[in-house]
Length: 296
Image (spheres, helix red, strand yellow):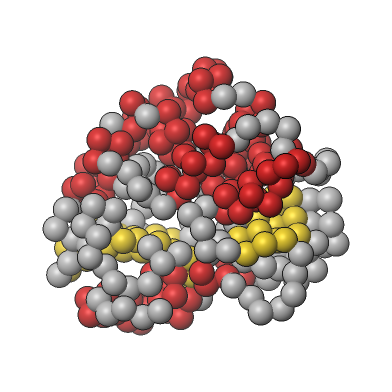
């Protein structure tokens, strides 16, 4: 039996819950949605997939992204909820070995970006917010994600934050966030009510507080970020998200990006495609966002 989930905070919490109720002996497979969408991951009987698109052949599937809904029968549950972890928590609540209610409430809050300005500017004051920022995707950190899964299964937030490796990651994240502010300002331009950040000049995209952009450009209602998938530059990733402070964006981001080989939530999503399509896709995305029409 394998567990396949996404390397973000919601995915980590999904893994903690599922490993609480299932005997999963194989290493967790941390993958991006595009890995499922492009067929890079082949599901096997017994596989549990969470917080990702459905893959034919898996035994259980749990997800909440509007663009991933399917019509064919499956085992598990799909619902539009604040987090995928919420679905799993409700599905297995009576069989869980400990109380995860606070963790799930915080995961809901973080995954829907229901944060205050103070939480965005000073995440070091808020344990769950800072912890979530240490999970930034990428295969190189999988050992850390696995450690977090184990810690969240066995301890409260105070004991998790006291772990030596977590403390180090948090310190690194705070430093990254401080540097990230200047990088965002230098590489972002405003087009109408859109903040567009272009990280294609970097061999490795800068990492940092993903909510900070909304405090730096408060007049904008949506953010678009462009970067290469890896050093080969053969594939490009465009991410987009509603401002969490200036909530006037009417576009369903996940639905919009599903037209460009991607998907996501109403408020945020991403798409990954061959780099030669970038000019066309970016122009169309910017045009849709500037029009700012509702499209459900």
